[in-house]
Length: 135
Image (spheres, rainbow, N blue to C red):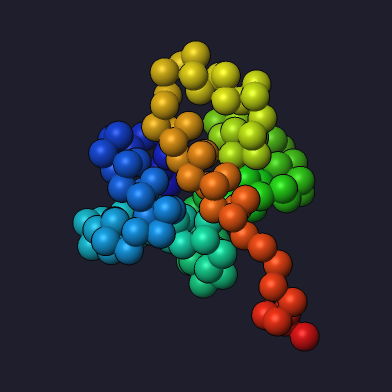
């Protein structure tokens, strides 16, 4: 199990670009030994198979982070209960929490602010289309 803060910045930049929807970076992650980050990028974009993959491959903390970053308070509670403080703070930054954003700024962790911004940008750009409702 690897944590986001353990990756090199260039790998995290590829994750950021994959989250933005750039398939070249998604496939680069997948083809270069980072299937967990490829899955995370797809999970952020709403792919349920990617979430299932994360859950089955010991990346539950990534799946919880994904859910927590988009207003799932149960996932926030899970991260807190399991002492995943970094992911809790990152999820808050994805939600626009100024205290969490300030933390990443103070720690000179701008790559995580970039990732949080990409996630927030994607989430904020989503609209509900009643034509695609599952009923």
